[in-house]
Image (cartoon, rainbow, N blue to C red; front, side, top):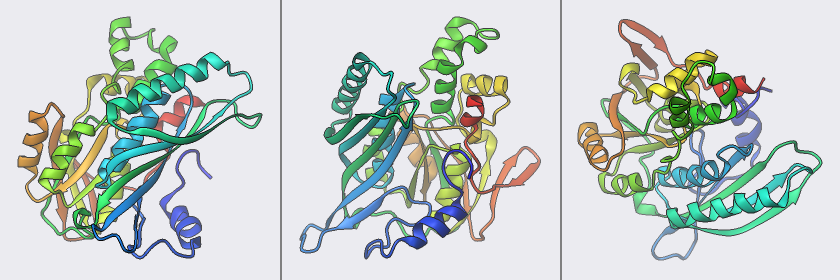
Length: 327
């Protein structure tokens, strides 16, 4: 199988279909990152949301672990409460590095208003880099769940900038190569593209505007996120590529390695389906969050990307472009 997340067909065939039951809410479904469990007898109908957020490698690991967990919970309509960490390290890891990792995780958890509930920490002869498995837990009210199906002619809104998580990773890990083309100050900015990767502030606005669907964007980039939100919403989409927010630093880093920035790790980015996307985008922009209406839902199953006069059909998510830099 390919590196990174398995293909959607493999997920459906060899994972979801092998589970004897999910829950009475049929959660999670294909295209959804989190499962919801409503506890019988709970008069307030509060549910527990759980999801997994894997992180590989030491670069930006604390931010990728905490921001990835929090953002996925927010996209699922949940209030983030806690994370549980499984930490696997290679044998040559020094204790000081572990200590620094956990200090940074703690600082970020305080910033996000969550706690580290439990964990497992081990050194393994079977790994050659840091492997973090993050279990994220949140609470959701049954009355505030996302719409099961979205209709046609709704707005698609993008929050954050595409590909910034992957661009920051590449800038840090491939610094020596990139310095052959870019000035140190320019590259330093690229290395910090993911510093504001938390969508905590966006969560408050999302709760007020009641979008029909929200999709956290990570592996596979904005193209994978568009495919997933269309799948989860049972709708077609039509998107203008030029309207997707993206930083020039991300474009430049991707051009150096001949990568597609719209298929690159994109933590700190979300997609929303809204009935009034312009109003929603204005609300996010007023809060300092990049936002733009990038397209519409359609009444068919087509997933179309427009670039000037060119039209292409979106394909199922490919291997993330980031992995090409590791070969």
